[in-house]
Image 1 (tube, rainbow, N blue to C red):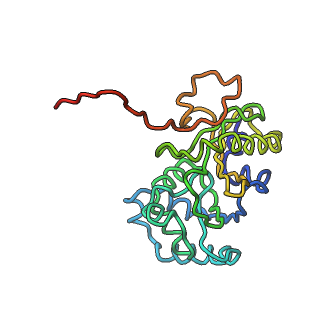
Image 2: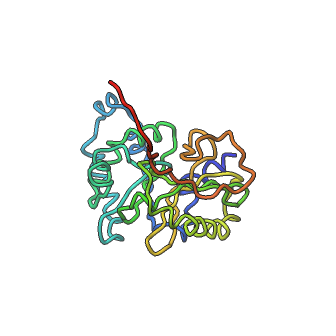
Image 3: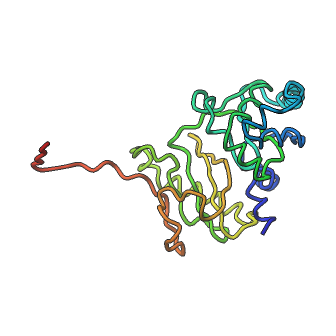
Length: 246
């Protein structure tokens, strides 16, 4: 079971599935860096050699950044710093060593993951601004695609209705190709489909809680038959005479 759990981390699945994902470089973190990321504000305030640690981290990330020509996106083994100001303002794009360390230190998600013993390295990949209509969550059982959900539940995107079958076929083809590589009987996969129809793996998640089933609503349902791609419904239209009183 522990091997299956490790498979869900990016360093766990990338060696097998990297050809179906964005190019990624992994930078191992020293224990002092992991301990600092795991610490709360009070412990960090009392850290003895913060300037030295910051300098060592800047040096650590400098060489790997040479492999990239522009902005990059960083994460740790099992989560990304999507809860930070930089992610809200710049979608997490960074291009200097100091920015990598700063965004990781600013993330409460990263802190919790480090405190749980889940952080061993930093994952660096090219930054691409992803369109919200092209991200999806796949539900996979026994190496087969069972269901697929719109990822960003912002609103109904009418254009997705016209490509529903196409996107399902693209995702189904991917899982037919890689299903035998998955080391778990059930898992959830987040993917991105480009405007050219190529599909990339973004992340893997465990089946069931705490993973959000999104538009599949509940894990307590019949998963025995393919459900297809589920999209948000268009807004309801009212017809006839409507009386409103205040």
